[in-house]
Length: 231
Image 1 (spheres, rainbow, N blue to C red):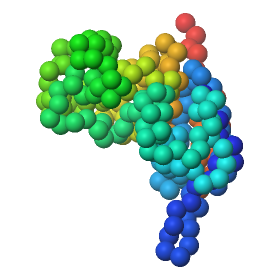
Image 2: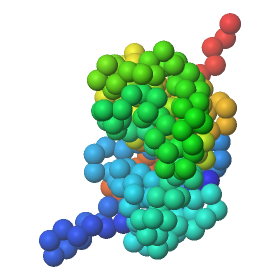
Image 3: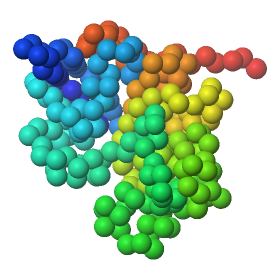
């Protein structure tokens, strides 16, 4: 699903450059549930932006669904994002003047799906995250956890190959955050590939694999050990 080979990224800083990613090698297979952990400045947000086709790398290779990502203009990047990726953000990124069902159906509008089908699919996915009864409510009428569930429904509605979740529980209390992770675990159990960016150890431990970043390099990449309780 994702393959990175010696990936580098730098940003200009005055007369010099800030070398943020310093040779990332990473492979994520279809159906995996992976978290990327790192403190502020580790490079995890830069990596997410590159994986999400929101930024470009300087050197190295990036393959998404076996497609080599290089020299994309914004139109092509947007087309590939629409085809392959679903995004879940810490700040939800919902449109304040649109209802829950309108927010969820918006990606389908950009894919040219007719209004009736958009409405039906959006309602199906709101139902999937337990919010069908809140379909006609504005974001201002929803709790943080409900907003994030709307965001998850919006990410899923186009049936992407990969969900990129950037600190999906960062703006939520621990109980609500656990509810959001439960939804993500359920989606993964159905076969979805999910990549979670987080700085929270307890969130990362709910995925199957933890990749740790520090100073632009991967310092460890380990399977999560699941505790089996004896009955």
